[in-house]
Length: 158
Image (cartoon, rainbow, N blue to C red; front, side, top):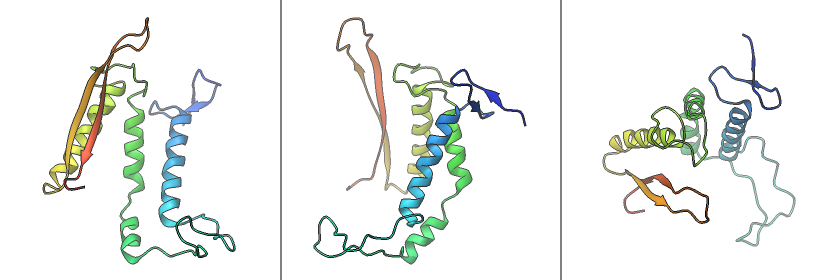
């Protein structure tokens, strides 16, 4: 498969349009999260290390059976598909298009909202999702006002 080069530093990009840097950053974040949850690659507790809230040495603990079962349910292909989908929107810049259904932060926001609503539907009422938005007025002259929004998944009673 041939590699394409991007205009920034001549680095390769993947065929799905996401820059190499974005894909690597997402992969590193996913790997760090997985390592934090599983303890894989974590250094052993330093001799005599103290926990911030207790006056006793920190000790390594194996994940519980329930946690190991949950970790086995993580699907690497699904994580990769999600990262690729988010990268396909092309930019995360807050001033990018809010109304374009295929590109920019608005398109990514709408996709995340739809995904979370799908999860909420399957939660049996334990989760709700709403879009919170407002118009950001300029804070200095020469800056246009723009629409800001965020997707907020909520678990009632939390």
